[in-house]
Amino acid sequence: MTEGTGRRTFLRAAGSIPLALSFGLLVSPFMRFLRPTIRPMDILGPSDQPAALKDVVYTQADFPEPWTCLPFMFEQSYKEYNPEQKEVRKIPGYAVKLPSGDVVAYSRICPHLGCIFNFVKDPDECAKGYNFKPQGPVFACPCHLSVYDIAQGGKVVSGPAPRPPRSFTVKIAGDKITIVSLEAGGIA
Image 1 (cartoon, rainbow, N blue to C red):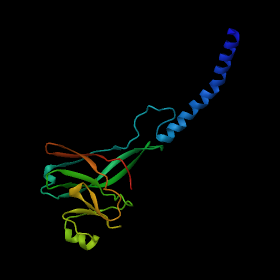
Image 2: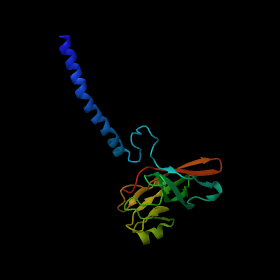
Image 3: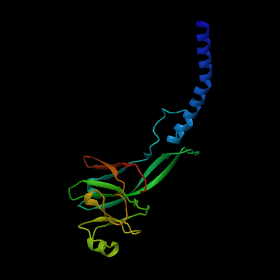
Image 4: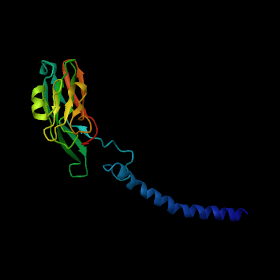
């Protein structure tokens, strides 16, 4: 009985080795499907999330009054399989001082179809050009007339946009206002 049991155990182990090797060889392509920028068999590699190349820095003096809006260009590096091992994308944005004194920043890329939207301070101008009269300053997209209320966190108040524009993380330390990262996501 021990001889037969030993033989069966050996045959099971010998038969399962090719199966285990086949399964092991499928793990790497599956992980590359989930995270396309990792190297083969590097499951525990660093995150492939985009990273800011440099922070955008302002001072409190740059925002002298409420509804001061300053455009900026945010550079972000994405990991890629190319000779440079990265792709740098420039994302246009607006930094706005709210009446509360807070400074918020949003990507200027419309989440509807990727047009670049404008800052419209005058509600009457918005009513003429975008078919919507807001209560105060807004972001407005000239392509399909989406309007975003800045005072309500970029809420869509008119037009076909599915959601607010992506926001930037703003850090304030003393007199220094720094835009450090962009909310994850894309168009729509």
